[in-house]
Amino acid sequence: AMPDHPEDCTDPLDVLSRVFGHPGFRGRQEEVVRHVAGGGSGLVLMPTGGGKSLCFQVPALCRPGVGIVVSPLIALMEDQVAALRQQGVAAAALHSDLPEGESRTVLRDLHNGDLKLLYVSPERLALEGMLSRLETLPVALFAVDEAHCVSQWGHHFRPEYRGLGVLAERFSRVPRLALTATADPRTVEDIRRQLGLAEDPVFRGGFDRPNIRIEAAPREAERSQLRAFLREEAGKGGAGIVYCGTRNKTDQTAEWLRGEGHDALAFHAGMESEAKRDAHRRFARGDSVVMCATIAFGMGIDRPDVRWVVHLDLPKSPESWYQEIGRAGRDGLPARALLLYGAGDIALGRHRIEESPAASEQKRIERQRLDAMVAIAEAATCRRQILLRCFGEPEPPPCGNCDVCRAPPRLFDGTVAAQKMLSAVLRTGRRFGVAHVVDVLRGKLTDKVAQFAHDQLPTFGVGKDFSESAWRGVARQLVARGVLDVAVENHGELVPTDAAKPILKGEEKVMLREELVQASAAPARNAR
Ligand code: ADP
Ligand code: ZN
Image (cartoon, rainbow, N blue to C red; front, side):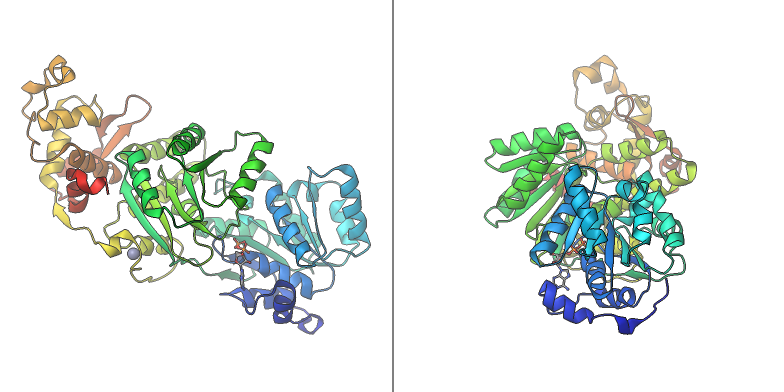
């Protein structure tokens, strides 16, 4: 819809201060609010915590009629409705978990014009009669929250979101505002197409979260790394989130942390919904709670004092990582994000994409996203700069608040090291994992080395100059570059790719991060 009668509406700034008690808008909020209050449609791309809610709540209150908010998560709807009611706004939610009697009351209020904001699940909105009902009522606007759920490119696709395309046809005069924290260009175009917003403006902003210090490190001894991190954070108050790659790991990590004296909880999609709600509640209330969770934990967290987020496994894309770390430091105070990753994660991520039933075009995109994530993890330049470029920011300056900016790594010519590793892999017949290959390089006479007579190989003991973890660092960097592959389906054996040839032939130089190799060689720094 194009802006119609801006004069009809109440002043947004007035609503902002009177109803929400905020003195001013942030970032692009005001622009969005004025556009929608004036009858315009569009797409808002703002990170989690960026203040998307006000972008539709304020114009809904400025315009005549009820604002309809489509939201995929019941917990999220209920939080927002409760908060709005506390501020004196007539708000309600309509979803499948609602007892029959209550949904009748909501529908009655809706028809009597007693509601200013109605949160609806996409399923409920699609139910027979709901849209026809709305056609008989004055509707202030439609807001489609978590709009990336409409796109198959992301991992949050919800078939019911597809049905929202009809809003453009059936309510052509009502403003429609889609909102998401996902800024990936492909998804953005998909959302605009699916929701009929191709001609409407996109408001993008606020992706930088300068208060979050970002750090990444190879995962060498996960638990002692986590313990060291928590020791640094001790006594700072607030909550923390440990993102784990699997459901099992959330339980195991939470249990271990409880043993370490932390108030730790687990959360994953496989839990009963009552247990999930309970975990959400405890997280919202408890002081220094540590939540060990899969990425299922996230939507609807509005705790401003999450002080840190740790990832124990490599996220699948910069978008998801950013969204997850964005849960830290919403109060604007210093917060931290630590990413731990290993060569196995990179290989596993690549294999998952190959094995998935997705179309080849989508696989290509997912590979690019994973590679971008690996580039951030292995970065030798400002990590935030790489991250912000992924979100389409043209020339972000080095941030000064990531580990790379604070202590820039030095690179050294690691060509010889790479050649030694590759030839050890080849000479042992591409049948062994990193541990055995490193034993061969370091000249360690293990049972396995003896069994396969690998002490007879010319590469046996050629790598005594590097520590074991230094060699692991070399392997990981070679995996990150796609020079080595890890056969995750089998026993994790290392397999050189075509990219190994020019290195072995000495036609290509390999620069490695000196600091990684040295840090690994010096246990004192690891134990920090
Ligand atoms: P998002 O939906 O983008 O994740 P929210 O709408 O939940 O973000 O807003 C995040 C936090 O920022 C909330 O606590 C909200 O009250 C606060 N906030 C948003 N806009 C403003 C503003 N203009 N002034 C003060 N606080 C704001
Ligand atoms: Zn930086």
